Length: 232
Image 1 (cartoon, rainbow, N blue to C red):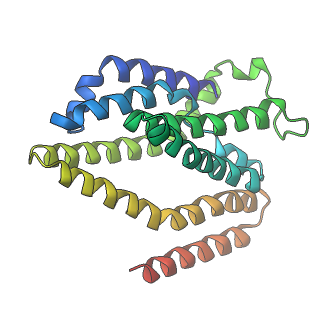
Image 2 (image 1 turned 90 degrees about the horizontal axis):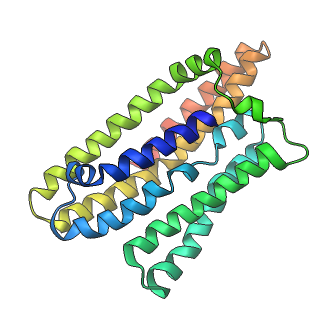
Image 3 (image 1 turned 90 degrees about the vertical axis):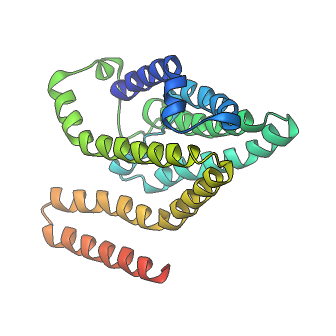
């Protein structure tokens, strides 16, 4: 928790202080710069509530609550967006506020799950939140691949946006954004399968059942490949 909160605060400070450079790198020029700036300010300011730690909830075996951490924020955002964008006429800023509102609900749910719930699987105390060097190092080692993957994806998006922006075509940027969302929607089931199989494999290996773990991986691989073939 502490590592994430510290990283979120650093992201907010650096992102807001270097916002103009960030927008330029991402290709926000001309008429797009104003709305992009409004959106980015809100999103960066709410970085500290950007996750409800669903992976930790899945690790505790609470798959239903982990699903709710994804589902409830989306529903909240869907309810807030029309009110903020059209009802209050906030436009792009309203969309950003709706996003942060949904994420804040997810963060509040995780705080209740980890710190306030009576039958919570983890009993986290203030002492547990203090940085512990022998624990921090493995966390960084495990998280490094995901971090580098995210940085690479962000750099690719920035490169594409910048290329399209230099073509002076807002339509091209909008089309790319729409296509990206469609791709995300289509690949979400595969992402869900891959995330869902992780605790099954981990528990199986930890419980001395490697065959069960391999069976789970085999079924997950078949499911993702079959889905990929069906959506082609």
